[in-house]
Length: 83
Image 1 (cartoon, rainbow, N blue to C red):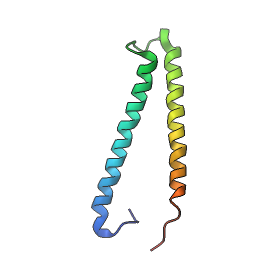
Image 2 (image 1 turned 180 degrees about the horizontal axis):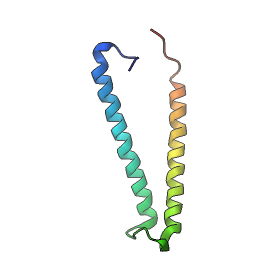
Image 3 (image 1 turned 135 degrees about the vertical axis):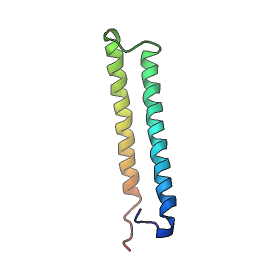
């Protein structure tokens, strides 16, 4: 928020909120897709806990990779100028 002019604070805040919500929706979509790929229409019960744990490991790996990509994207933008 400190990188925009005061008159654009509302637009910057709305943009941040929209990107946060889009990220939340995408993460839920990815998690649901992976769970459905492994479990299908089955319920999560003790009998298929191995499939559930495998899907959780894959989901965590996907999100860890996305986080590392986000760190590198943040580092690539460079230092911002102080005002």
